[in-house]
Length: 306
Image (cartoon, rainbow, N blue to C red; front, side):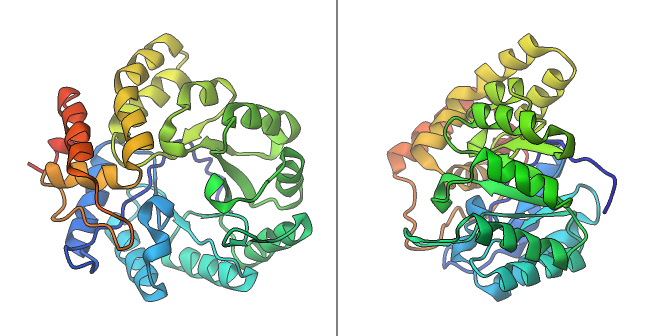
């Protein structure tokens, strides 16, 4: 494995569609270029905010190849390879590494509201992925899975699977969980990250997070927050964060994954803000409120594509 330790802002790349729901690859590469120009430390693709649950396997392969070839090493790329099957998750991860990914990210195995693996099954799942690849693994501890990953289990996985060195903690009470995980397994964890659109970023950084995985809406602002915090300028970091927090809160509570694409379309960065059915489009009133907030802040996402 590479000796590189990844930290900072790793936003989720949206998957761009045309108005008919097909992949829009030209808009996709523009979205990637925007994030790189915004100063991100890396990019995560095919995650939940990429609508991975609405993509075919062939589309996943096409997007992985397109994005990694287009990035061409400018920033590290994390590919989300979650699947219920250990075998399929391992094969997805192997193919991601083969395509040039620097890391893979997976949720624990689940299906629907009731099908879950026990702790032994979860450990075997991540071990199967680790056996298939040489690059680092990030565990995504997210509410969408409905799986309870205890701190004891996460620490044990980190200690027994060397590649499993990154954790994206976005459950309620993320700061407390990050703090406890670092206390139990800090010497073998390379990257404690938060997520959930960075809505609890400051307490999570206070708890020891070294990275964040938000949407691609305001990566430039969040990079400034991370850089200032890590330079010991906590008050300056908070000042920047508090300026952008109303927009981040609006995204988190009102829009979800649709916010980034709505603002990218508003700014001329992508051709369509379409999401795949049955996910509904933003209500016009909600969208107007989002754009109003972003314009008041003079967000880069509205200017970059002009």
